Every structure is written in C-alpha cells, then in structure tokens.
Length: 382
Ligand SMILES: *Cc1c(COP(=O)(O)O)cnc(C)c1O
Image (cartoon, helix red, strand yellow):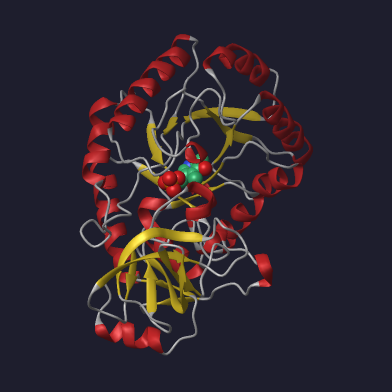
C-alpha cells in the first residue's frame, strides 16, 4: 500500500526503479531486535539479501553483525562499519584471496563447509601469523519444504558437512595449528514458512551438539542460520514475519549450555517487505485467449520469478475499476521473463505505474545487465 503522495512521487521518476520504505525496515528491526534481546541471542544480517548502503547503515545501527558469503561482502561489511567481531563468513567455495581478506579483517568466524577448506584456511592463517576461528557448517539432512533451489540442508545439497564425516573433520582440525573450532553452524534453506521446520532444526542441533560434547569438543557458538519466510501473497496484512513465535520455538526446543552463545543470520525476513520494484506498463498486447501487460521492468531487474518460480504481489497504482486478467511480463527476450500468469488487475493501460511488492530481498542485489539493460536505481522513503 502506497499513500497518494508516494504514488505522485513515483509518477515523477523514470521507471523501472526500486523503492524502499525505510520506516517499515526500522519497524521490522525494532521487533526483531526486541525478540532477540529477550533471549540474549545474537544476529548477523545476511548481506546477500540486500547490500545497499542506506539499508546496511540502518541495520548496523540496530547492532546486528554481518553474515557474508564472499570476500567482497566481508570487505564491504568492514568498510561500512560493521564490527569485524560480528562478521561471519560462509560459502562452499572460498578462494585463497577471499580467505586472506577475512583473516586480515580478523572476523568472528569462518563457517567451514569441508575438510579441504579447513586445511587451506589453516595454511593461509599460518603464513599470515593468524589464528582462524571457525564453525563447522553442518548439513543436518533436513528438508525445509521450500523451493528446491533454496533448500540447503538436505544430504544431497552441496552445503555443509554431514554427520558421517565428523570424526574425520575433528582429526583434520587436530592437525591444524592455526585453527580454533568454536562453533556449529546450520542454515537449512530460505523462505521457510512452516515453523515446524525450525522445531525440527532445533532438535537436530541438540542431537549434533550432544554428539560433539560426547567427543569432548567444547562448542561455544551455535548458529542456526536464517531462512524465516515472509508473506509474498499479502504483504499489507503481514508486513513483518512472526519473530516472536520463531524465537520462542527455538528458545523452548534448543538445549544450551551456560557457556554457549546462540546466533542467527536473518536476510529475507529483515529486508524483503520494505522494497518494491516500480515500473510502467509499456504495452497491453492481445495473445491467443490472453492479454499481456508488458512492463519496462523484467527478469534483469528481478529474477526471482524466473529463477525460483516465485510469485510477488503486483499492484496497478494508476488505474482502478473493472477487473481483467493479464499475464504480466517483462521486455527481456526469454519466455521465463514473466512476473504473473492470468493475474486479476484493474483494466490496465500504457503508462500505468505497477508495483511489484516484497522485492527488498534477493531483488536489486541479483539484478543484471542482460540484453544490455541499465541497472534499475534505488529510491528511499526518506
Ligand atoms: C542466504 C543465507 C542466509 C539468509 O537466508 P534468509 O533466508 O534470507 O534469511 C543465512 N545464512 C546463510 C549461510 C546464507 O547463505
């Protein structure tokens, strides 16, 4: 929902562009950090969801750390003022250069995904005279019941270390003089809307951390990753995810030792709802048994529908009146460049302003220049 003043402002700006409602971002962070503090949990914002400086600045003010998945994200986190002691770095394919960047930055933890990676980090740390603090990213073999492209915690996925490798990993670490094992890390998928998945995850974490305790390994940090979903169908009714239930499930289920710190890595649930992709209708075209509303925004601006079959709420901010059905598509030369099929909209005409909602996460940050399109710029409510 946009007020009249905001729509008037949209009318004066070249489309397509991203628009961010910073007051919703702050409201979301207010609630998130309030719930987090209740349990003395720690959070690291997943930079890959959206790394615009305006957004990072606000998230930093709320005291969150940074969850990074590349050396450049680590550099950006440190450069933009995030406390290196709150930076974690995950990813199955960390390059030597990226590892050097993170070691030089003295980050809180590498979330390690394989034995060869741990050995490479150790050898680089040795050369640099540093000790790398690491967590093991565990593959807990949990199906997050989300789209298969955003499931990361099943045994067939490329992420994490499976239980049958734990002894080998521990003996590899024992041979590494410049590695300190301090945590276990879990991230099982994204856009998880069934909270039972987090219940299952907490049980799995208990089982695995007991397993490490039995082996005589002291684990100081348990990191449960991100993944909490948002309401793409109805962002106005549910602008903020149910953080209270999410954290309370984890608090109830998770067994923790007095010396253990609990960490999270929220991405989508923090930034998705505050962003929209704003575009104009270029043409309305009649096809066989259907009408196409062709926008000036496409999969180059927002790839989620093409990549994950994701659906975003789409609103015509200009026209009102009788409903008609449209396939809402972009200008890119790909048939997957479609935002919606057979969508009921008011009768739509050239020039109408269209809002594609809930686009703050994995939207602008995934934009590309395919077809030599320009990158859509960003505007803010403040
Ligand atoms: C992407 C990612 C996250 C954030 O996931 P969301 O679903 O956006 O909350 C957290 N941790 C890791 C390791 C990730 O790769």
